[in-house]
Amino acid sequence: MKNRLHLRFAVLFFALLAATAAHAKKPETGFLDRTVIVQGTSYKYEVFVPENWSPKQKWPIILFLHGAGERGEDGLFQTQVGIGKAIREHRDRFPAIVVLPQCHKNIWWAQTPMDDIAIASLEAATKEFHGDKNRTYLTGLSMGGYGAWYLAGKYPGRFAAIAPICGGILVPDMARMQPAEDVTPYTEAAKKIGNKTPTWIFHGGDDPVVPVSESQKMSAAMKAVGGDVQYTEYPGVGHDSWLKAYDDAEFIKWMLSKSLSGNAATK
Image (tube, rainbow, N blue to C red; front, side, top):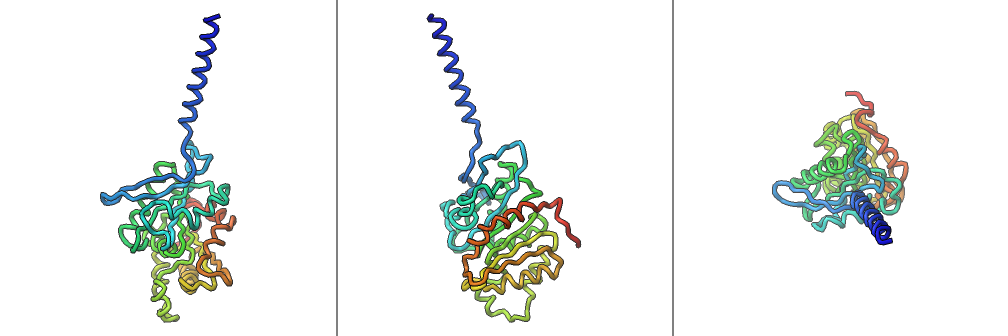
């Protein structure tokens, strides 16, 4: 009787041990805290990992650049607006790794070291979560839209698709003073990006912060260099056009369908 009782306890013990080990091996998913070191300084960022993530395959990976209002050093606020909010509302639409670095206050994504921090965060997450370099994407809103244009030009051919939202090339005050006939800044920006990167631009038609002409001119400039460009302007929508853009299931499908190995382009 005692032997049989001991056997039952042993079986139960090892069953619990096996269950605990299996649970411990389950990978973390959801929004995860991470840090990256750039030039000796540590910077916080977030990574969204899908619930069904597995190291047995490569995953599409999206770099998201937030707007000026989410700047800071807490490493979290940038997840509350834009793509982070869309993920929380429609997780099933995002079968991808999403990297959300945070820009510090009083500086822009297009300035050093924030541009380097964004790329370093992307590279770290790509390595840790098996990101697919052929399916790496870039998007951003407002200040992050400016950053998306900038990084796409600084790293031409790196991203399988880009989606700048209510961004531009010239900061708002300069954009308003720019002669309508002078499209040189936009032409130069488009040339840096080239025609190999599918692009979908979004902007609110009544944006009071960033002139809608910024996106209109970039759409025309990208088409002029032979780029694959889509442009969506929301009539009557103000600066928060990202709400509609990131809520559009077709936009996410479009982005994730692109691959560096499959994008057709000519020089």
